[in-house]
Image (cartoon, rainbow, N blue to C red):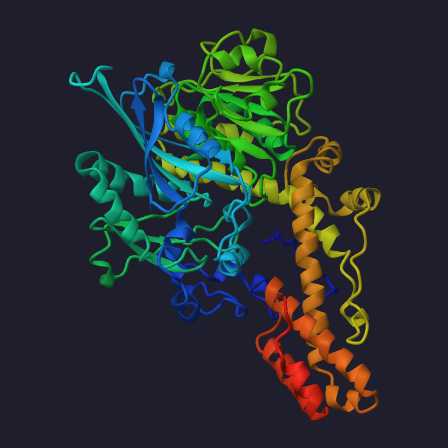
Length: 605
C-alpha cells in the first residue's frame, strides 16, 4: 500500500469507505485486522474450489534434494511433488546455488537463500486466486513474477564410508514467496527429519503442506508440519508500517509448537554490524538502485546481508534485481560481470574470492567479515577506496567513491553504540534500526505521495455518462517546487542535499516501479468511483429516452465494465457490483424477448 502523508488526498477523492484510511494505529493484535470487502474477501467458497496440490502451489513450487556425485558433481536427486516442472536451465541454477563455494568451509548445517530467473513462463490455474492474495500483500511481500526463491538447508559432515570423505546434501524449497524467515523455520523442522528418514518423510511433508490454508494476507494461520504446528500471520498492505502485528497466543493453542513473530524480516542490526557506521549511505545506495556487491565469507552471511539491504527502504519496494547468493556458474554471470558497459542496477551477494577481481570495476563494494565474531565494535569509520580492495581477505568495510547527499546522522550511531556497550538485546537494537530506516524512508516518500495525490481529478469531475477523467501527468519541476514548503524537512531532522537525492531517485528503477504502482492504484480508484456513480443513476428512466440499438450498446458497455471490475478487483464499495448486475438485468428485461435471449448469453472471452 502507498505511504500516506497527513493530507493524502486533501480535498480530492474521499476514501472514507476504504480500510486504508482508517486509523491503523488502533489495531494492535493481529486478530483484529479484517480485510476490506470485495472480490476474494470470502475465504471458504474460494478455498473449496481448490484441487489437489493447489494449496501446496500457493506456498511452494516444489521441493528439491541436491546431492554431490563424484562423476556428475552437484545434481538434483529428487523433486517433490513428482509432477512439478523445472527446465534443465532451472535445475542447473538450483544445483550450483544450493551448495556453498568450496572456500566457505561450511561444516555442519548451513541455511541460506538464493534467487534466480524463471526459465520460462508457466500459466497457473490459480491465476485469479493468486491475484487476490497479491492485492492484499504489502509491496515487499508480493509474489515474484519472473524469479524463484530457493531456501536451502545444506548439511556437510565427515563420512569415511564415502569416497569423498564427506556427506554433502541440500534440501531446497523453491517458492515465489519472499517469506524468508518462515521458510527457514520450516526447513529447521523438515531437513533433520529428511536426512534421517529420507524420501517417505518428504512425501508426508508435501501432503501436510497441501492441507494448509492458503497464504492470504491478514489471516492468522496454524500450519501443521511433520507433527509440529506453526502459527503465523501474513502481513497486509493495510497494516500500519512499522507496527508488528504480533500473533497472540491463546488458550486454545495447546497444539501450537512455534509462534513466528515475522515471516520475512531479517535481523538488520546483526547484518549491518560490520559496516554500521555507513548505514545511512547504504540506505541511499539502495534507494537509488545503485550497483552493489556484498562480499562475504559464507552464503548465509551473503544472503542475509543482501536481504537486509533490500528491506532497508521498506515499505518502498526494491524494484531492481537482487541475488542473495550469486556464483560464477550463474547464467547471468557474464551479463553482470562484463566490463563493456556500466554495471547494472543489481545487488549481488558473493563468497568466491574470484569475484574480488572480476567485480573490481563495480562502483560500490561491501565487505562483510564473519558475523559470529561480534565482540568488538566495528572500527571502520572511513569509507575505503576501491583500489584498496584486492582480495576477499581485505578488511570489512564499504569500498566506494560515492559521496552521500545527506549529512551523516550521528544520533543513530551513538544510540546503537550505547546499546552495544550496555549489552542491549539484539532484538531491541534491530527494532531501533528498523524504525530508523522506516522513518527515513517515510520522510523521503511522503512529499512524493502528497504531490502524486494532487494529480487525482476532483470527485465532482466524474460523470457517469463520460469516460473517467485522466490523472494529470507527473511533472518533475512542479514536484520540486513543492519541496520548499512541504519537503522532508517537515518530518526529518537530517540536513543535506535532499533536492539532489530526489533528482537522482526520479531516474531510478525504484521510482519507476513505485510510480507505476501508484498510477495503477489511482486509475483503479477513478474507475471504481465512475462505477459507483453509474450505480446511483436511474438507468431504466434513461433507456426510455433511447432507441433499442442504443440500449443494447449500453448493456454491452455495462457488462464490459462489470467484467473489468471483477478482473481488476477494483476497490468499489460493498454491494456496488451486485447493484450493477441488478441494473443490467432490469434494463435487459425491458427489451423484447429476442434481444433478451441474446444479451443473457455469457460473453465469450
